[in-house]
Image (cartoon, rainbow, N blue to C red; front, top):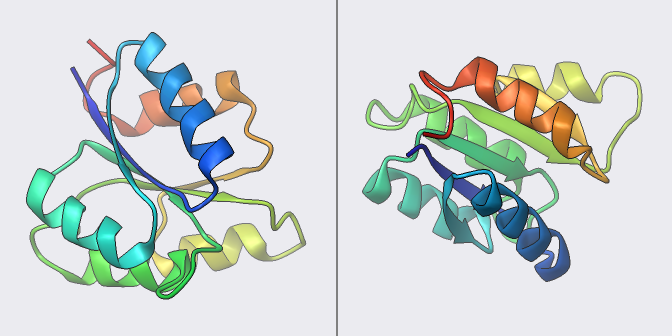
Length: 124
């Protein structure tokens, strides 16, 4: 079972996404800020990270840079989740080290397609 780390400070977004992913068969871990997310990623080695980019403290851009610069977490795929849908935001996420980008509100089927492409195997 693939382990997904959701790093999201908004409780409603976090809970809704976690519930939906668990129903799809994923093992879900949750962090509420960038610093906790970085620590959990290093400790738990998730198969994929869903990263909110507008986090308090260390934002998602900086957290992704830190994860991608550390040897033990650099290989973990990161999908940026952001309400920022302006021109150039996708490129900014990819430059920060994200492997893909999804705007909020999240369209689950679209997100799942991106996740499956990045995961070595599906949820099972």
